[in-house]
Picture (cartoon, rainbow, N blue to C red):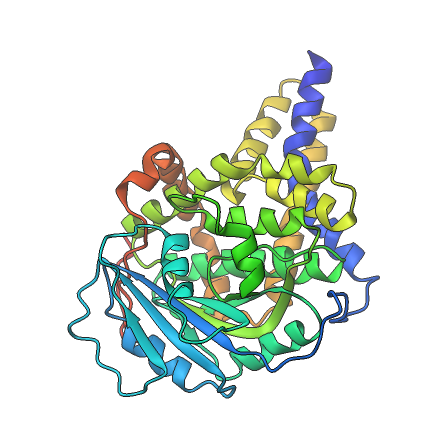
Length: 390
């Protein structure tokens, strides 16, 4: 029993220190973009797929930002699933509005609905959410990695809004994951995890990975990244390819969104075991990351284990304390090494409240995909200040 108890603690506790250890490893690695598969240089032609479900309120702003892109070789495909598109009017012929006859209720079905209706054979597709805004050099930054031979690239999803405590804490979480699951993983020779949008692939790779798979509910990015890693390809991290993403502003929005994310982790975490023993460093490290539970889960379980050890072993309590200190240090490094708004630091005192709502999400995770396939968006502009702090 003692052995089982120790093993169980190690399986949970290593998640506290692994990010910091990977960061230390990354300090011995040089920043370099090379490492992709050699390929013939071509002028990249992008199919930009914007997916919308039920809501199209933010679509004009999304399209406006995309039409301001510096790199001009693209077409924009808006897949308006179960949407009223009567109010969408665009004069630019590079914008194609697609209204599926039947409700798709699936990210991948929406993507392939667009792919199968491409006006020309785009060699690269990039996926943008209906609430995203892109920096003008977004495609230029992606090109750097595609020209280096990569066939899958994840950009950065910066916060579009920091107008509530929930939004700021959501942004802090994203900064943490972008730093460790993006920048650090890629720097040490593994792959960046996919974030659902702000990502791009060669059209052929996307077809090869998902065209014959039925991926329902949330989590298509989990299936996609596993399919890519199974081929031992690396997902590059483009830290200057920036899209702005709406952060959660309301507690009910947070609970519904996180319940879907937690559901997908339980559904797909076993992919990690399959990658661990594939044989390459890229796959091994990525497999470890896929096995990691959502942040709040392993933090809460770690606290419980430390408290139990008060009655069992004070040495173990000290070990847990050191692990927590290392985790906090690692979290601080992620924020300090990123362009973090000072209001995000100020919001960290509300982390217990944020965790509480994620516990509620855990309780609703089992049936999460039955309620909705998309997050409801409330934030419309930078000048809109919402006061939902309840």
